[in-house]
Amino acid sequence: MMRRLCLTDDAEWVVFDVVPRFSGPVGPALSHGWLCFELGEQRRRFAPIPENWQQLSERDLALVWAQATPVARIAD
Image (cartoon, rainbow, N blue to C red; front, side, top):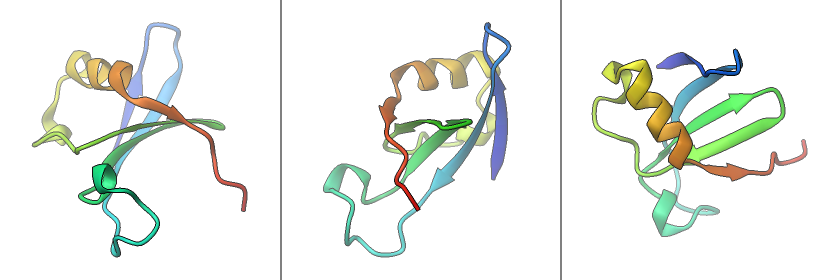
């Protein structure tokens, strides 16, 4: 599932859930998955994945975004 989130600065973030297939390189806090927020090179991560996040209102999803941790993009 993928959603778009428009914030007050007219930035449109792409939001999707990530569930690792293996528990290898992620720590215990991320082992059950996270929401990923992306805007260009910017990324934020929120764990655990909120129940029924697909049905959250824009306002509630923006609150989750505000609590998400900014992360550096891994180079290819």
